[in-house]
Length: 203
Image (tube, rainbow, N blue to C red; front, side, top):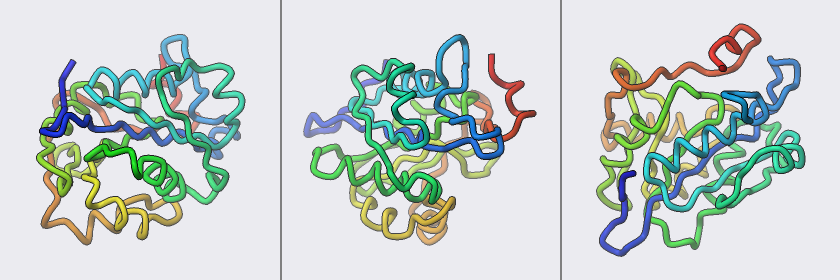
């Protein structure tokens, strides 16, 4: 376990985006896909916790009631995004809004459908945190991926630019000079669970 507390004793939050409806998976919500005998959302929360995140916020959308019934999200703050069908941008905005006023200096954002990214990669990105202006992303063979750490100074800008399924891509492009990439290809695989064929990655 890594202790990622800054000088003010505030720990970095984990922000898990888990609202997707799995349109290309026949409408099966990704949070409820089974991985190692439990819902995928539980696995993703465990990654953030093992990496050293303190507070963990989980954004739910599709089948939110079923997710809450079937997944153990104890210790997490669950946030419902009624506009989840608009895409990842809506969930990112919802999640960042839920962290506003909590005093955390940064949020580590991860996606529920990337089980190949484990605690080692997340901890590397967390370790690169410096202050509220930090902007850090995992990279895979030099290509930016997840998780991404946003210092609190960036939250308003990210939320303003997050639309559709683009999430924070536009913001990260605009702030490329400030973005620090942390190579993680040696400890993680950044595949997504998007299609029926991708289900072979689940155990």
